[in-house]
Length: 203
Image (cartoon, rainbow, N blue to C red):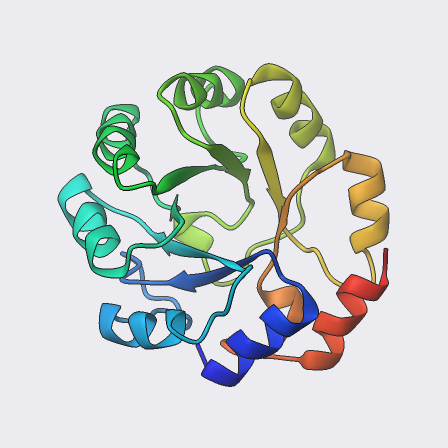
């Protein structure tokens, strides 16, 4: 949410910088498109850009066209049909789709496999549901393991990850990609450079 935090995260080696844009529920990290574009402009390579949003295809496609990120993370209750449409329409623009699935997703493994078949780049397994987007929770590593074995696309792990537990969580889960936000914050939207540095020093 701050240009200095974007630069700091990139400097420490973050692979993907995420921006929450027009999320359909009230969350303290929400940005409008204009502010997101200003922040994206200061994210130097090799870091990639991810827009975290949710909702109907027309809204998601509008945001994607206005920001042109590397990834769109769909983090609400998008249907398989809507997700497939977004995948198709953004493929020619080089924008990859990450679809979030939650512990309470009905028929989790079957549903996740269907999203992979629809062409998403990856799935994000996150206990931070749309109805509990502020507080989140700890990831269920047992469910994450089952999910990884059930699908053909990469699965990103989120939930309660911090510098103090990241090494153990990655070792236990064999996660190749992790997603975190509050674990390196002082307060919502304000990153803590000491925590970001400690995260990378943990490996």
